[in-house]
Amino acid sequence: MTFSTRREFLARSAALAAVAAANPFAVGTANAAPKKGGKMSLGLCTYLWGKDWDLPTVIANCEKSGCLGVELRTQHKHGVETHLNASERKAVKQRFADSPVEFLGPGCNWEFHSPDPKKLQANIDGAKAYLQLSHDCGGSGVKVKPNTLPKEVPYEKTIQQIGESLNEVAKFGKELGQQVRVEVHGRLTQELPVMKQIFDVATHPNATICWNSNGVDLDGKGLEHNFNLVKDRFGKTVHVREFNVGDYPYQQLVNMLVEMDYAGWVLLECRTKQKDGVAAMIEQRKLLEGMIRKAQG
Image 1 (tube, rainbow, N blue to C red):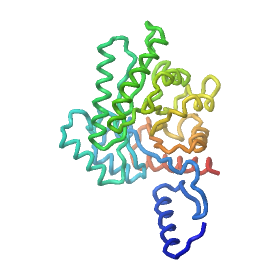
Image 2: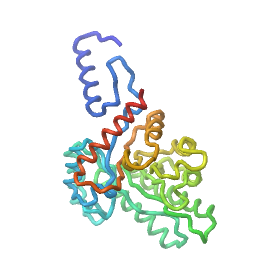
Image 3: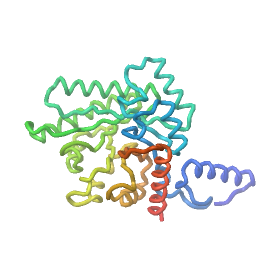
Image 4: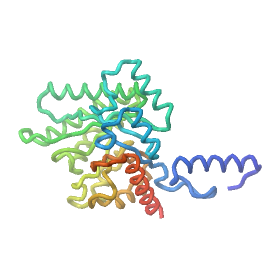
């Protein structure tokens, strides 16, 4: 690459510096192509870490730790729920806009496996209500999940029902600019071949998968095979636990995310008790940064 003027050179250098500051994995030198995995970022899912923080504390701690995206688990202290009125929703949106932290949307428990039509419809309606909430608060989507395949119903029937429900919810979300993220979760439904069957029915492109780093990911033909079954439907979020707890092969997972040039958020859905949440988040961020560098070579 050549620069015809000093001004062009300085402008290009400033742009590269800004990108590098935002994401240290995005660029190498002025003459180097962006590295794979350079658009991937670490954020927080307030599953246990952050569940007792109010919203200003969530945002402040994410900013301090460098985990600049957050999925707010419903029914926790931060209180971003559907009972908020229009003014309160606007205030949540503004609070995030005034910070470097991106609101990724609510993490919900809506599920679509019930054989009871009334319960199924209530879950569909609930998911739609939270998609509207996310839109109003400046988020980009909602996490939902399958939870089981009921034993009393043929599995194929429930898989069809879940997929069709996701299509309906995804269509609604698309109209709001909100992504539907289906966490790989639940008895039987956390198995990746089953999730693949669900998404063979859930063909709406706004229905996406949220990888959940479950132990069963390694079953059958192994992690790489199971990852490849569903990677083309990944959404904006991936869930992980602590990188340095347990024996889940996180380096292999990161290698595959980098290889596919995943451009979404890796969210900490951690379980251990911590005295200093910010320090714990920083530790995990540094671990991910190291794994990304290793994957990038």
